[in-house]
Image 1 (cartoon, helix red, strand yellow):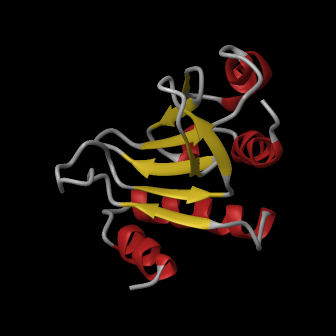
Image 2: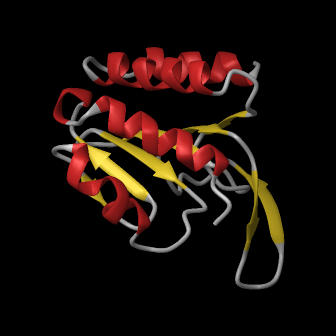
Image 3: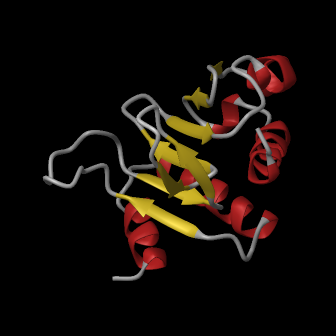
Length: 141
């Protein structure tokens, strides 16, 4: 199964309105960066144990770990969770960047150091969320 097929199956397997919201976010990212690398992480570790929610990833960066190793990883991640959706924007310049730059304009969303969570797209300003996601694709932090 290709990455695109895994992504489509993941989106199609979600209940409404998450399915429509995920599809809208996915389409928006493909329009913003049509040639970026796509990822699908099923949420399982190497031993097959579920350790996170599945996620769709966009772009690519080299992630540095505390033990000195590094690995390629996505820049933007989108995931459904029990209460709504999470958008992960990695590589921001500092811990408060998302909250300071986009938090006041996003609408009803919780913003942490690298994650924006919300119940539904209708609760957030989609243009501001798209702006934050696009900035994350080119972040140098």
